[in-house]
Length: 279
Ligand code: C2E
Ligand code: MG
Ligand code: MG
Ligand code: MG
Image (cartoon, rainbow, N blue to C red; front, side, top):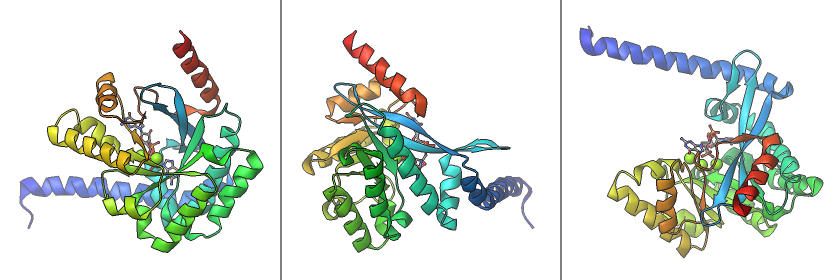
């Protein structure tokens, strides 16, 4: 028999977990319908140069506007989309929509898209990206494909070939959420990338502990050694921005600059940024 005190705690935990599992499985069932019903849209979060504060790119972030449940964020449904294989049509939609939208922005502002390993397993994916670029007229150099290190658990040859083909076409490749999970210097040696995005957990931690500050310093040096753009995610304060500027980061992303904005607001954001600079 369970002891009264810890038992009640565990029961609470189980209930919360069960509710979460149930919510996710309901989402799985709903995803296919939602794709057919066109319930998805993108928001765009600016990434700026640390020195210039001018916009380099906007990261496309997927949202699901559910007719009853309201807005659902990607952490709730991307895992379900991967599990059901629906990430393939959904991911293709993201590519086309982001390219179409970005083609209307003034150059050189680019767009970054998040892509998961399963999308590369579909060997048609890279061709699909090229086709979208051609049809929308977006210059390949204005597109960045963000992958996390979990893609390296997919067949290495497939990933290497896909990333190489994208890069030789002029598309940029970024390693997202770097510093957590399976981070390995070997991934930097073995896979061709253009950009390192340091996970947002570091932006907070580096202000609180010397160890984390040193780690950020080392990752930034690593980026310079491999001659890649270094972007720090999750910048929420001027203090954090100063900190990474002093340590030579190239780019910043985070609520200090702006949260994700709706598609139609991108042009307004660009105009405001220009105003600030000329002011
Ligand atoms: P990510 O690629 O690391 O995207 C950044 C996430 O951090 C976004 O959350 C963004 O809103 C949030 N964020 C940005 N700045 C700050 C900040 O200053 N502070 C804090 N606390 N958070 C900040 P979001 O939109 O909920 O996306 C979560 C994750 O979902 C993304 O993480 C990405 O891995 C995934 N995701 C989003 N869109 C797509 C997509 O189209 N396809 C795939 N496969 N994954 C996507
Ligand atoms: Mg990302
Ligand atoms: Mg990220
Ligand atoms: Mg992250």
